Image (cartoon, rainbow, N blue to C red; front, side):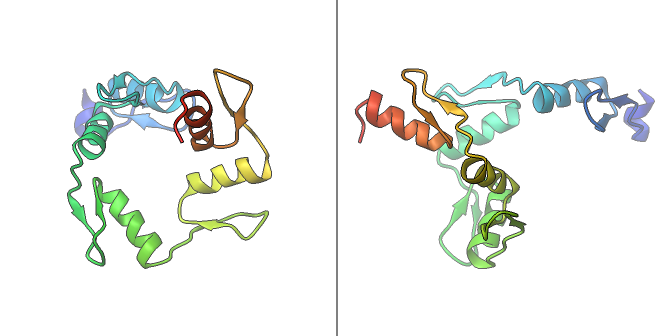
Length: 154
């Protein structure tokens, strides 16, 4: 109990350097980060997530269309503050913090750089169709394949 009141982080993750003041916080970290357990499912689509808050944000923005954050430079609206920040950095400031070591590709998001390296330079095709032998480098390519080939959606 003293860890909570004094900010002492006695509960250490066995997988990384993360520490928590409460055991429940450590368990949430392990489930979310290391085990990637997605206990929260959207009732409107197949989206699953690791936290209730993230599911609530998903429903608000995707299904209810609620976007509270307005860009002061254009008509863009975002559901989350971080999305608006990213929009401003990319669109209005031209920020590119991550550079590919193999080519001239630049992006403002680490995940986009990782995706770029895996799909362009590593040649990995990690996304496999469960209905045929098709494999894709990127998830959206697999979705496009399933829609056009298996569902007949053009």
